[in-house]
Image (cartoon, rainbow, N blue to C red; front, side, top):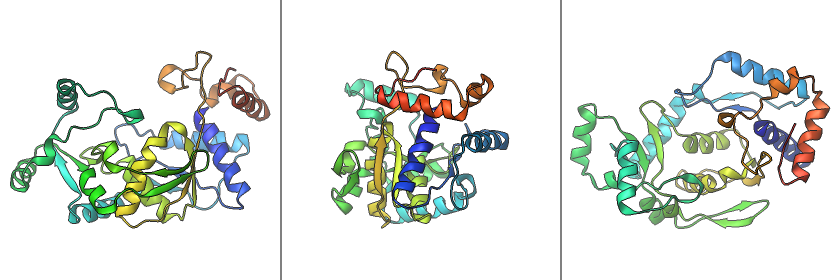
Length: 273
């Protein structure tokens, strides 16, 4: 239902501005991506609700070569470095430092591999050591400063790259991160407005930094509220939140689904059906 709310908000924003609403299949995480059958069911749900989208559907898993070129550009600019730390090692390093979680992005990486020499890094990569590629936010900030971006609900925001840690832009099992893929694709599709849940507000600062270093256009953003259960907890599939298919099977009409979402928005996002 949270995904449905995002789709409705996007369609409404596009219609209100006389624009087009684009559908993108964000399936770059090859460790979690589902089958084509899942994509077909999503289209079926959207058609049942009467939600339509404009233009060609972009599929991210078909664009890895585009993301790879952007990664090479960032490497050539000296803005990426290989990180050989495991998640367990990062958590242990942070625990030793006594650092608390940073906003909604989780724990900030302490920069352990930032200081590895180029020769050592090259040798470790050559011998096949597993690694990710991180964006050096200190160098990014030295290059771009603290650029602005606009949110339709919160006003003008200032991006401070170093506040968000050296984020991962690629791993062996995931050739491009969400952060890199969406800014590349937004530019490629000529996106002027991005609407999404407020849980991605902090990530937008990272996206603004990438747009600045890659000289990409900057959309206007709109971060809407999230659906919650009766305890105020965000609805999530991992917590058993009901899927749209189950509501269809229970006999709800499309209008009943829309009405339940409208009621939830009037009730601080609390959704119960």
